[in-house]
Image 1 (cartoon, helix red, strand yellow):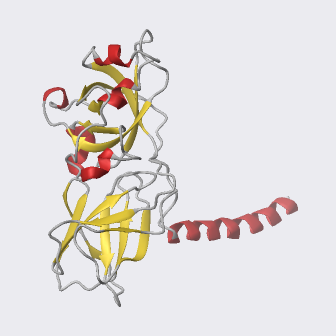
Image 2 (spheres, one colour):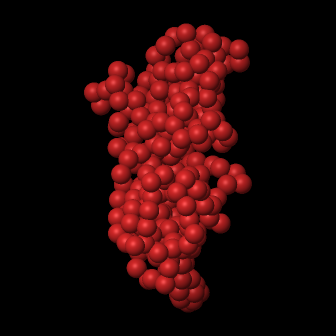
Image 3 (cartoon, one colour):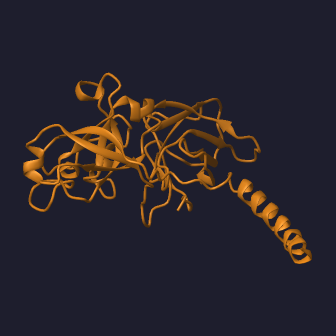
Length: 264
């Protein structure tokens, strides 16, 4: 009994220190991985071996045409798009017919919304690039799977992984010292954004940004004075990350500024 009391006296302070460290880092570490698979339907669009849409309703623009997005993009129904707050989330999608479907799931990044057809009436639906859709088939059967049109699938969330990439902030066209709009790129882990704040130079106040559309956020005020620090909080698990003075004082619209941080 005496040994247990000594062990308890040792463990309690250690656990308290660990708790406070986690809170200081933005809260307890949660994971977006969900081991459960859920039913949905899927179609494909574009050319049979194509990379998917240019741009899309998330606003990623030409990023969808190059790695790591290339050939991994997909549009989802409103129930997963979440008015744009679902942009950037990653999913594993797998079809079920053993005669043609691989046991391997295709990993897709949400870059667009499909608002009508199979995507309407509260359905959970994925409209994938031709290349991503074909990846669900066994070797050599991609064309046959695409010929089926709409298929039943199962899906689950999975962490986004961008090896060698740090979170970047693209300053949208039209931004000024009084209206600043940012797009988040290459966010590991959750991939989605639930809130964003910026902090001006020589200020201790975090100013809340407003979600406007897709993966784009803005703030109205000013004149806003850089360099700006940016804090983002994920939608799925509430993890936060702050990039100190990532946007310089001489920032310009249509430029992208890369931080030294990511969640993984």
